[in-house]
Image (cartoon, rainbow, N blue to C red; front, side, top):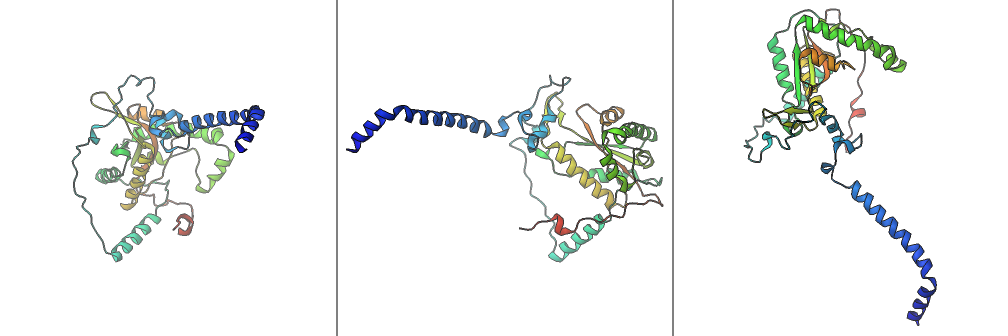
Length: 302
């Protein structure tokens, strides 16, 4: 009875049944296609296909330019061979009391840090600069590629030329590129397009990031996460500057990077990221009276 009813139902309504099933089948095929495309491993996708917010999207900057497109690319750096020798990690352990004390002391040291734009002409031993840059080089980096170069400028003429390059672009930035809102929000730090500290400080450290490096055999080795790696290294550099009793201010040379890089004679695959004048504060140096966010506003404990 049930079987007869089923056959009779299908025979009379097969067009309606097919009209429902066929669109569903088509939708399933389309959905499966896009799901497979979306779930494709990122390592198999071109960096240019990655969304802007994806952490691997920075590799788009590492794509060869017209000038270096003929360079062979090495898929793996010799630094990362499977037979890389391993060594024991030497750990210096402190008591809980020592840990608390050291962490408090370091916080107090770093909490005194300020962005200073007025520098003394008092000379700084070059050995100090070597040591703080050496410290910056201890930072972690993606696949241990160490994608940074710190160009230390002490020559007065070169510093003056860098200041001239930056101020020329900064005038345009303040005049029309950045907009009134940005200029107004900077008023509390009492800054404008003039950057006298760039040639007044005894040293000017130009931080350069490297999307890739060229090996001795001409192969190109990609530097993974070079942006964040260089940023971490710069953070350690700023802490090292504070540790020795010197001051600095982070300066982003908007639209001036190429001219500065060429002035310093650095290769095209190095990109200027920051300028850090380094020295003693001027005796009459002032800084904005600001407060930092309390711990509860920047830390979440789960």
